[in-house]
Image 1 (tube, rainbow, N blue to C red):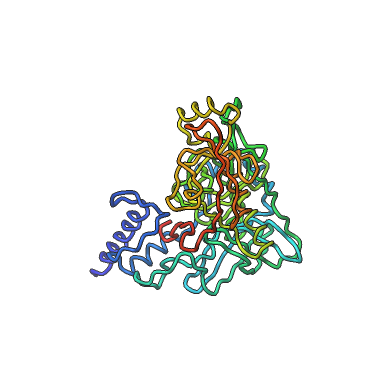
Image 2: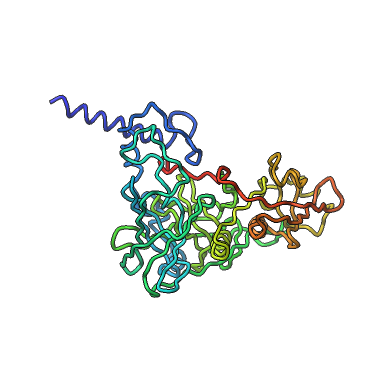
Length: 423
């Protein structure tokens, strides 16, 4: 007779603990992207309960009115890409199912190639059945993987992992489907903006690959349960630096659920402009420019391009101090675009080359630099090489020419990505 109330109290205690861990009510808000060792104060039973609780994957409509009541332009954009959006499921040895979404980017030789997030195939950090001390490395491929694709027409196909990269958190999956599925249209993004621009920033759906703060964007996904319905989460491209290691990410206000991890980010024409990574606070997206160049480089050389420069930088208009901008304009009136250096890591390639805080990069490898995205694309083509960088400085009257060695990121310096246990 006394057992039932005790069980109810235990369930209530665990639910409260889940809430505390997910929302940081014990003090400082928990950063889910920071690698944190599991606290020994929680039992293995607690961990399994929390994991199972956080593994529930609702549709995009769950708890968000913007995703429930879609406007006409959002629906039209989503329908333009719907044939190329798939639901993905991964079965592995230590966990039943990991779910996400992907984008068909190629079809050839009866194979369909899907681009998605590497979270789908990453070894779970603390799966059910493991004790707290049995932590699993994050950047490890899950063992005995079986992947499945669910398409718009209700058909499902088994597949295999073709390539993956935990640095950029991207994966390529291949499925034998025949040639009945069409690849998405990939639109390279231009996020540069002239500091003298007279055009208003706020617009409706972007009608080109030009992307400026306030542009409407949409994450389009597909739910993993039959009938595999299409999902959409509209939002805006935000002028906000990502808090994660991968500084190439875009930040959007789109609200998705965990089953939308890896889903395509599209513009108003249904063109794919990024690949989404789920987080509690916002949706981060890696620009399709980088994802596509990453894949093309792999197809050509059989390895990935992972440049490491030792700087943090962003577009000139995004972060430059107003006084600095004024000083730059007075000294270099012809310069209205570029990349401003926010941090130089001591001992890095950039530091050795002589790059300094608040330098503005205006040329790289003989090409004019209009944005950080364009700069990074060029750098990806020159890993292991020396390139000439032209920078301007507020205290110099002429541009400086620097020789920069583009190093490759070492495995221990890879970008850290979210511990899915805390997501």
